Image (tube, rainbow, N blue to C red; front, side):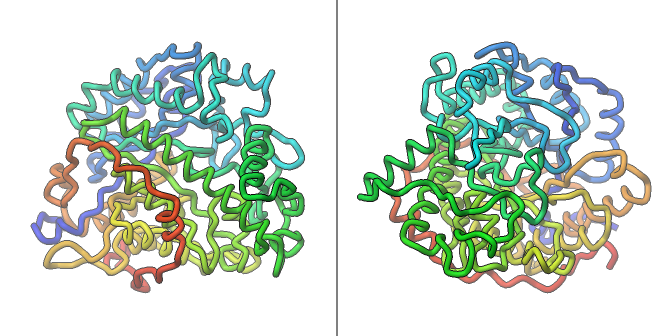
Length: 496
């Protein structure tokens, strides 16, 4: 039986549940409030702390530039509030459709796609010229080609409008998290492994920087470095290759040459700057609100055990055995007082096929440790829907890698975990019974606690971002530091 014990409460990790993708449909209609209410009431009774919801740009600003319609989302948020749940809102500047688990289609706003008709280079592009319409290319972040606005200004205006229109829910502290979408699937990455272009696991993916804007940016950077002859890679293979079949990633391949290192540094720094710039706008938009900002980093666990880390590199994470690609992201996150949200918390190495050279456990350990080393809060979610004890126990282990401390806060504790996702399958009786046990164990055998102060999660008003981090300090953060040790299994098993 769960209880409330002051010391044990300091081990409490709140649990959120991701709402279905199409809860507000593509026509901006909240389709089934009664059905959702029934499920929200059950989640609240199960001790769940809150829910996470995609707030789609393609729905809100679909009628035209700066023509926002928040009404359906307002009704949804009010229902969540009425059911006694907190809310994590994702600023979803990406398309829904084309990724793992996407069951509905929500494209970018039509007026943006129309601009793409005459200027297709606003989209990420692979070497063979195929465009990806999931998210605008980083190359147009600061180009005023969207009816006079830049992409960054579009995102900034959207977040300011959200704040104005949801001010009552922000003031009543129902909305606790604003997760800022920074790429495909809302993640800070390039769309290097698009299923709708034929990518299949465990393909290495492809670099996505061949639109004219990023190409120009690379050529300018190369010229500045005294190498105007350098071009973007033409030897990195295609989506479903294995690393060794490419000149770029093979043993002693291009990725280890001066030219390869220059390219990978440029490619990953574009992503860092992109995240930094948009987080700065988010910080300005929500300044003074009692909310946490967050960003999501993708769990690219395949080829992690290969020296080339090929799938991470094509996604923009310049992570090698002797170079940490994630701690610089944590540094940027710390400048904006934000949270780093990571995925694949449920996965175990033993469940992966050996030919993918995959290691989700070591990857999670590296990324979370890097966040804690930079003194930021880290949160996370599962990558794929699972309803079994093994997956839940793995999530609990990652939430408290060194177990609970009966006398106070544990050494290591994640800030929160979001379970993917609310569905009829989850609510099916035997699945929901084990999920309820999972919630209790995440809460360290404590009852639901409505006061976050009691588990050290009080949220002060958002302060202005710290000064921009110099490049040499970010480079310093690429030096690998051994991760914190993890217990081999959790001391709070759902089936223990």
